[in-house]
Length: 65
Image 1 (tube, rainbow, N blue to C red):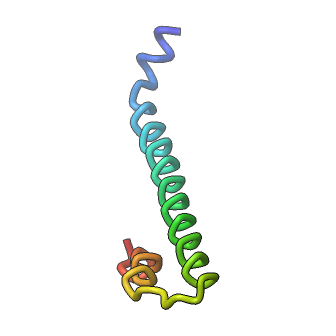
Image 2: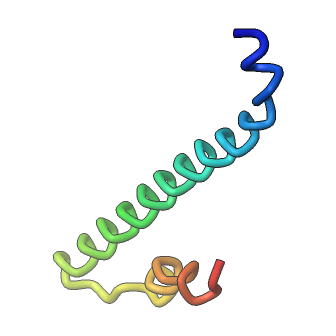
Image 3: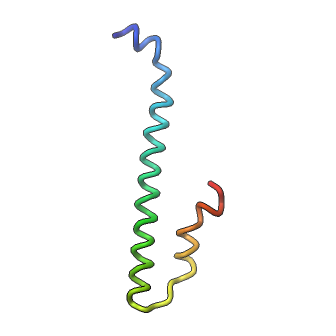
C-alpha cells in the first residue's frame, strides 16, 4: 500500500480540484435557485422585479467566467 501511495501521490491534486469544483458547482446551483425563488416571490406578489436581481442571476453566463 505504501508503494502505491509513493507512486501516485500526485493524483491527490487533480482529485482535490475535482472535489472543489463539484462543491463550487453545488454552491452556484444553490445561489441561482434562491435567486429564482426570490424572483417568483416578486412575481407572485405583483411587484416589479429589481433589475439588479435579474443581472445577478445571469451575470456569470455573460462574463464568461
